[in-house]
Image (cartoon, rainbow, N blue to C red):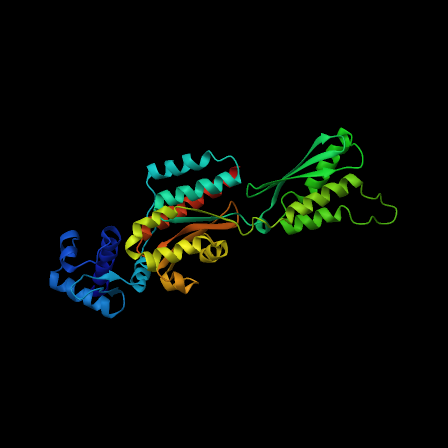
Length: 342
């Protein structure tokens, strides 16, 4: 009973501190929460929580504020992530369903996350290496020029031009289209590259040599599949939300503003969120950078099949963890659905 009561006191202090941005005293807890015990008992519980490292007292006469350890216990004891309301779900669905391509999905997602959480939102572009080939299209632009269109499971579309030595008849173009699709469709990038390259390996004795058109198309497809320019790209939104934390500019805001400029830092902050479907929360010093020890990260993976990339938010440790976790999870699910249906 005593442990559960102290957990209720800690939960109340976290909630009040996040909403009021002021240290929380025992009088405020008695007035705002029906804890069912006397003010003296609450004071004793607060003292015990402070002694155990879950709370700290900024000033002698002030109330208490949660420590990183306190936030950690609060997050770990959340029985469930609260669901988004029907109105919030409709807003997310309506906002993301209008996306026209992968860039639009990512940009809409980052704006939506920033609005829902009032934090800095980060969305990683899907990594090429985890994608599968959805379709390859060949379009004749001129007698000796083809547009090669590579469509991946992430919604990413790559377009390249293939120059041919001579014109292709319609049936030859159709046969080539079927050949490359049969080899690559449904395969992860590495396997698709190997299958395509097998189409143009030196022919066995007596077998027909691959056509120059096949070689040209395979060359541009392999080049497109080997393009890792977007593998470490992230979109960031909501930096203006940090203005709410002006009271802790030097400890929380300035280091985070500097981190936003470094994509490698942001990717590392998202961490291993691409594994599994759970929402991960790293609080303060649990993160990889000491200079961001006043920052928390809430992230998860997204993607239609295995998680292809990560999205989440970064912000000062004084945040609404239940609401933020719910928003991150909901947006990830909708993004996965949009990509799967695109």
